[in-house]
Every structure is written in structure tokens, then in C-alpha cells.
Length: 435
Ligand code: HEC
Ligand code: HEC
Image (cartoon, rainbow, N blue to C red; front, side, top):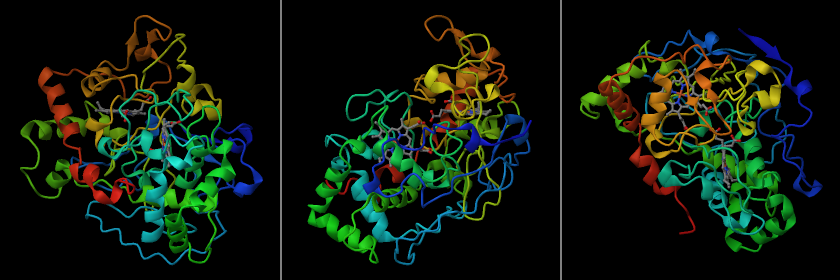
């Protein structure tokens, strides 16, 4: 099934547009980076069955996922006058170059500024929270809790996501079909009011003044934006944070060593687990394919748009497929019944570090995740969310359940554990520069 949705028409109140952007913040909602998409192909599991990922999982995903409208031109036009990109990606052979918006080229100076901002609690109105509060390097930029709290104590109803290889995400967050650029995304935790994360909306000018009071920032902003000196603006902040996040690349796990020639890098159990993962009985790779273990992947040269959202049968609270309120996935945006519960398959890189799992952190361990897939979804016996997710009418046909021995389960989990990248989580260039 394939549909074209006119989302811009269907969505008067976009949750991805931060509320309350004052005029002095510049026009943040019409992102200079990334485009506001007019038509989006909504993909269903059945359209992505032509995945060609082989047993290495290292192939490019280009063209092998479900295809919507090809909207990868960047409608951004304004340039704030950055230096020409001097950036070297220095990637291993099995990794393509990330796609970088033309109006926000990578530079070492911008990445360094973005790193300072990412770790700076002064970016929250009350000075208590930074991006890094919920995105901790040692946990592959997650936070270890099911649902985090924002700076003013609001419960954020979704699980913090890993930022490993977020440069390749074709859509950002768990279930937003419109959020294509990291610059756009950064405005949500900064400015959203309900729920409040950093709450910058309550102190927009004050925060800019705080940064301007720090001589280090004057230097960092001027070298990141040499044609825009003396301008500490939200647009420059947002774009620098996006650049830092694009630099967060994870490609040095034991599994990477294995597929690039070191046969002893992973255990025999993990090798068997890889075969199960890429096999047609367990079917994991249909949604978690390619070098980044997710269909929702794009990179430099990707021609087709690749949003990918699936219902994996976690809930069914009314017997008609309904998920709990904060878990509607893309249906929250499209208001289409059959988009209910459709979420983005996250990358599985560093997955052993990023629990608890799923969009609401409702599964504690990898063993339980794997058991849930083997059961073809989740039966919740009692409580407010009781219902048989296995029978969810919108569940992907790739989550139909399978026989799994105790050995298979141990093998699959060993494979998932082989995706942990110790280099990534300890690399000083991604660490807190204020320490
Ligand atoms: C209070 C905790 C919290 C804070 C603070 C926070 N985040 Fe997040 N982050 C989350 C949660 C929760 C999600 C998933 C959101 C959703 O699906 O609605 C997320 C998702 C993301 C994503 C999407 C990742 C993907 O795979 O597409 C990015 C990027 C991100 N955050 C960056 C940031 C940046 C940049 C900041 C600081 C400006 C920040 N976050 C601050 C909790 C937080
Ligand atoms: C039909 C597509 C699909 C298939 C098949 C699939 N997944 Fe997923 N996977 C997803 C989606 C979508 C999510 C997020 C679901 C949610 O939160 O509602 C997810 C979440 C996960 C998570 C949790 C990620 C996190 O960061 O919380 C793990 C681990 C995982 N899948 C592993 C697997 C394994 C192992 C298999 C094979 C047994 C598999 N998946 C098969 C789509 C799929």
C-alpha cells in the first residue's frame, strides 16, 4: 500500500513548530536548513520488502527502502555567511558520507561551538538542563530512563533517542514525518512549552545575553561565523548544534571490525545472531537495514526520500489498534487511522547501552524486546493499556512472530551487543568541553 499525503494541508497545529517564538529569535520556524515538505510518501511495511541488505548489513540503503516523493532538494536559501567547508569526514569504507544541507556546511569551528552549546545548561531558562542532560555520551547519547523530565519537571512522554549517526536520519524523533533537519529539530527541545524541555522560550533574550557575557562564546561564535561576527543568534545557535550532532558518528563496533575483515572480532554466538537478524524467519532487517540498522536512513547522494514508519504491535487498547495518547506515532500528524502507532525504527547501533527501549521506554531489556518480536507483538494483560498488540490491525506484516530457541535468543542478543562502539562513547571530541 502506498499513499501520498498532503500533510501540510492536514496539519494546522504542527507539533514540530515550536510555540512562542518571539520575533527577536528570527524566523526559526521556517528553517533555513532543510525544507518544509509538501508531500510525503507514507510507507508501509509491505512496500519495503525489496530490501536488498545481505548478510553483512553494510550495503548502502539507497533505493532499497520504500520510496515516497523525492524531496531531497533543499529549499533553504539564506546563507548566514559561514566559511567554506573544510570538513573531512574520515569515514571507513562501509560508511557513506552524510547529507549536509547546503546552507549549513560543516566546519570544525561550528562543530566546536555546537559542542559547547550542546553541553551548556545556560541554554535552559532556569539554568538546570542542557541537551546533554538527556543525551549522555556514555549511553550513546541517551539517558537510561524510560521517560525523561524537562528542566521545569514536566514529564516528556517519549524515550530519549540515541544521537549516534543522527546525521543519517531521514526523519527525526520517533514519529514525526515532517521533521527532516537537525536544525529544525533542535528548536523543539529549546522552545517547546508543553511539555517544557529547556524552556528557552521563557528567557529568549536573557539566554542570548548570558552567552554574550562569556568571552569564550564571543570567540567561538566569531570563528564559527566569520561573516556574521558579533551575532549570537538563535539561528546560529541552532545550526551549530546541528553541525555538532552531525559529527557524532559511530562506526567502530566489534561488528564493524568483523564485516571489514576481522573474523575474530565477534563471538560465534554473535555471528549466528547476525544470520538470524538478516534472515527471512526473524525479518529484523526489513526495517533495521543498511549500515545504520534503520530504514529511515539517507546520505549524500540519496535520490529518494526514505521515511519509514511501522507499527510493531506494542499496544491495542481498544481492540481497534489504538496506542496510548503519546504513542500514536505519525497518526498524530496525519490523523489517518492506519498510521496509528507507526514509529521510526531507531538505529540499533549501541543498542545495548540505550535501554529502556521503544518510543515510551516500555520494554526494559533486549531479551524482552526480542521475546516481544518472537511473540509477534505484545499482550498487556491488565492496567490502563491492557490489550493484545499482537492483534493490532495496523501491525506490520513483518512482525508476525517466530519460533525462537533459548540459544537463538542468546545469539540474537549477542549480535545486538556486538554493535556497541566503545570508541564512540569515549571519544574526547564528543565529550563535555566544560569539564
Ligand atoms: C528532557 C530531555 C531532553 C532534552 C533536554 C533534549 N532532548 Fe533530544 N530527545 C529527547 C526525547 C524524549 C526525544 C524523542 C522525542 C520524540 O520522539 O518526540 C529526543 C529526540 C532527539 C533527536 C532525534 C533523534 C533522531 O533519531 O532523529 C535529536 C536530534 C535530539 N533529541 C537532539 C537534542 C538537542 C540538540 C537538544 C538540546 C537543544 C536536546 N535534544 C535536548 C529528550 C531530550
Ligand atoms: C516492521 C518493522 C520492524 C521489524 C521487522 C523489526 N523492527 Fe525493531 N523496531 C521497529 C520500530 C518501528 C521500532 C520502534 C517501535 C516503537 O517504539 O513503537 C523498533 C524498535 C526496536 C528496538 C528498540 C530500539 C530503541 O532504541 O528503543 C530494538 C532493540 C529492535 N527494534 C530490534 C529488532 C529486532 C531484533 C528485530 C527482529 C527480531 C526487529 N527489531 C524487527 C521496526 C521493526
